[in-house]
Length: 386
Image (tube, rainbow, N blue to C red):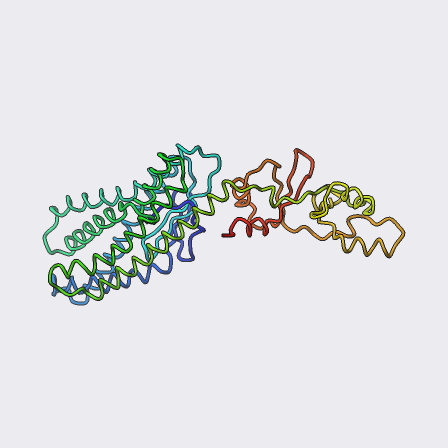
């Protein structure tokens, strides 16, 4: 149940409404989790209250709903804390693993503030579960023992104790892991180092889940329960791969922070639609060099970027005709594009692209003068390379 800024988005599911200006999504996988919880909880209810009969299944399902209500409050706490620090909640999702809160990316956030924000956002979720557990324990005295409300309260109370305690473990992707990452980020100044350390702790915790399910019963002279081992192994696999994903993302983020955009900026000039292509090519060739010719961006009649000159097509037209050939007649449409200043950094370029996800090119401007073009696919390939 972690709050993640780098989440790609909520998966498909039922939209339950809007909270904090963001959609609340009940993923389809939640129903599988609810079924599993119901199947596991109903037999215990029949043991404690055999008189419930078939109603035990309805009570068990009610427990699943209450459990995920606790998860929702956990995620809501992440969202409220994020908004307090100026972040915008993009989505809250409940799924088979619990849930997550996704925030919109934020640029120009000072390191000290960002680390503190991340720590607070991470820690408030488990704290809410602990508070819910205390409230549940306090309410137990108000209901009759073994009554249906008492059974639901005792189950939800201990579930919140488990949710709070497990999520405080200092390994990514658990909330405690992101809190550890934030602390190391604040102390060392390296978000990357904090993520790598917390992700490795997360892997150790993942192995620990399996070890606990096997070693604990053996020490008690009993055989490990296959269902418990299978369930713990499933959780461990999720934790292991999520920790690995976080480490991979951190490596890419570190590369992005130091990435030199000049590697993918191709020199370019702008030309009007009716500019003579022969003269334009001659001028462009004086600016470029042997390995990387200057690109020519053709403007439409309104002065907006329209396309890139196709040098092969231009050469063919010039060979066929002695007349002047307008640049616009040998231009390929540019498709989606976004204008950026020449001193933009890779992180800020990515931030800009969140608002123009379909852009294929970035036009690099020196104030009002076009000086370069970035093929965004090439940029992404470079950035994601090992």
